Image (cartoon, rainbow, N blue to C red; front, side):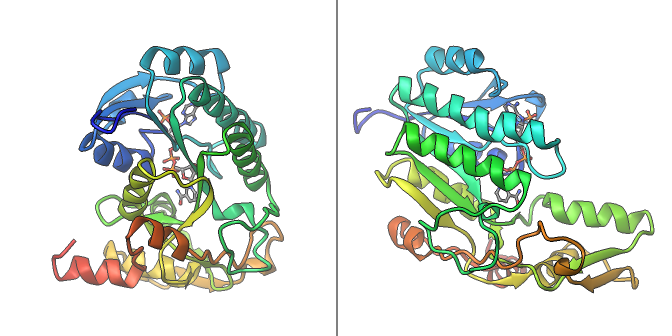
Length: 293
Ligand SMILES: NC(=O)c1ccc[n+]([C@@H]2O[C@H](COP(=O)([O-])OP(=O)(O)OC[C@H]3O[C@@H](n4cnc5c(N)ncnc54)[C@H](OP(=O)(O)O)[C@@H]3O)[C@@H](O)[C@H]2O)c1
């Protein structure tokens, strides 16, 4: 791609919580093809393209036809969205197909992974720490990471944490609200540590990464460490959900050994590289309160 050319983005998972924000930002910088599996109506920017990334032939057909200069790979089957087989088919095999096809057209590839590649026993985690997954989702994402970087060592694989936004409720909070609405109690884990990231911060980081030549693993997560309990309560309060005694605190370690506990991510390398600050939840909420965001 010449320096004067506008990039042509292909975004997988463009209809997802993250992908919808990525598509909007990418559209301000270039041409966007927004790949969707089942929800073309959810496309926020660019031209919708139907694509099942589990279908290798379909991936090659689409990528060779559209010839993107950049692929941002944000499609996934997340926990609760499919069984182990579906996670493997999309997160592992689908990522392999996307990487193969991106390489065939020499596109810059930025792929999204997760903090759940780690076991949560040795946080905080730097960028290059070898994965130690403890559940099926983590294993499928580790296989996806490896497929991408084996095929294209110049690709970037971004490990990130719980995403949230103040314009649209994140899936985790929405799930709590649904249960509370049915009069059910919700237990928030006080022993689960994360670096939640604003979906807009993450979307901006992904789009900026397409113009760097950074290669390999990179953490992109918010600066503030919060327990799942603290994070959940802050967001429920933001969305105006009052605690009627149904929101409880508990310990993940008491109920499961496949929930990684301490997944703090160190993101200073990405902040330096991109010239961005990845604000914590309190900063994002405070900025919203004074009308700055
Ligand atoms: N959400 C989080 O807190 C979180 C945390 C850490 C990492 N991540 C990672 O961040 C990325 C984005 O997550 P998200 O929460 O934004 O996802 P999401 O809202 O669940 O959306 C998933 C996206 O993947 C697409 N997809 C599913 N199956 C597909 C298939 N067979 N072929 C093509 N596309 C398919 C969906 O398309 P349709 O809607 O058209 O079916 C949708 O656009 C993923 O890599 C995820 O693992 C998320």
